[in-house]
Image (tube, rainbow, N blue to C red; front, side, top):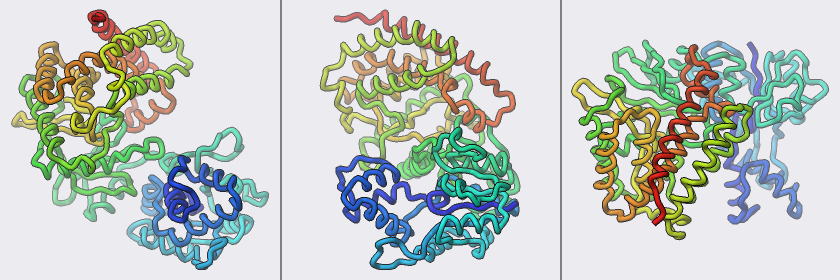
Length: 543
């Protein structure tokens, strides 16, 4: 199979580079608050001599600053798998020899080839593209002629104008890469990620694909691979090398749909914890940001289904270790946790945003639940919680000295119990600074937890003791516990969101996944959450 691919903004990503170069060259001020290449282009074109400025910026990005470009998310996975499957790849780019208004006359094509070489495009053991299969065209017409001459089976481009050229060969399968409205482009497949392009052209990811990616990252042959089910949105595999060493390989969600740097966060966090003798977590081994995969120590053990007192004490001890680390580390080197809640307003906004996403749905039972159950309870719980917050504390972020380092998804559902009874805690891709109140509440409310009343009481008392340096911790916890319960009632309804169920199914690759049944179960759970919150709210009185 012959696959042709455009280069700029299809393989090479300049998403942040355009903004960085525009700042460096004083085309925009630091006060400019726009986002993305398209918005920047539109802004520059409204300025005096804007079209000339925009063309000059393009020349700088594709020339002088080309070496700072990144690979598009997941394009490396596609290129590697094409190599191992013996598909012939062609890169066909509409790129002039020199940039417009470039006094330095930097050769753009040579810069692009140098970038490809640095990213191992022509390495037979990596992407394996023949350098003779890279073509640059002076015009779109010339580019389309080359696609026809090469008799490509597929062509992938980010510009619809290429496919609209009247001489574009009809027999070529067209993929328009980007966030376009599919209905506008007949006979063109519109896909916004390389993960989707992979599936459209190559089919489902196979064990051979994963083995290839792991082998290129590790430099070791892999002789065994086993997919581990039930790991949320990420895919986890147990792999063994010929030396029988076992590792956990984690493939993270597509960064087009989830912008959070989950690989980097988790990998660096585990390194940090081990450096500070917090060892009840896996060791980081290796990572590849271009392939979006990380390699970690494999932990043998069992899932914790029914936690006992010893399990609970280990979880408490781990939180205490994290809090001690929080007080003795450079706070500027770690980001905030994913979906952290550092103020009352922030928590309320998160719930309102989740509610807004769910309100626009076509499911009658969900709509009835939202209007008759959730909204009235949300209004009452919010009012009562608000009563216990000063105006200043509602709006201002919790001071950093009162925050703690948090996994942000902490519980026995993310742990492994070894033969000696000790726990290893997993999943730190959301790690960062957060209000310890959220950590405390989420541990109790998380749907995957199975705590009885006594265990919940022990946990809550232990957290009050650990965080006793914050005199308002208990008040904040009591005020927001109902709100966190309602937040979780909405989280478990994510299955109703467009595309969420597909991502969940893809991560688990479960053939028994029945979306209708899952949604019924989740809606019942949401009702149960609201019943618990209703009881909690009824016990709160205005003083």
